[in-house]
Length: 137
Image 1 (cartoon, rainbow, N blue to C red):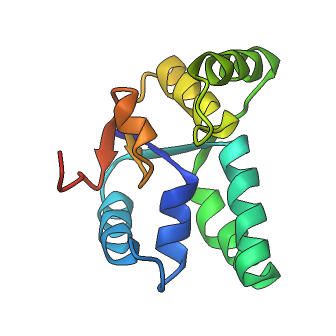
Image 2: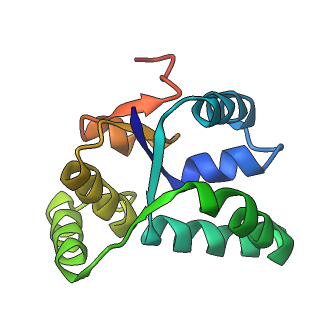
């Protein structure tokens, strides 16, 4: 299985105080021992890096860069995907939906990815499978 990884999952894996850390840690371990290809986007990497640096400092960014980024396949958001994401964001007209989310959905569709490692409900609203599976599903 090929899996897209969202910022919410990265933060939950890396922060032991995060409410989703236990579930994230278990799912992360399972993904690392499977034959799954792990994808993310340069926008997710930017968002995650910014939040890690702001919340935890540069050492957290170093850990992310040295231990996590090397095992990912990065999908680069180009101008057409950015424009598609921006259009989707404006059409959705929702304050809590981000441009990063909308570009993630577009990348997932283009790459044929069905599942996301995330704690963001917007992915399931878009029809993607969620890892870990939500208890309310």
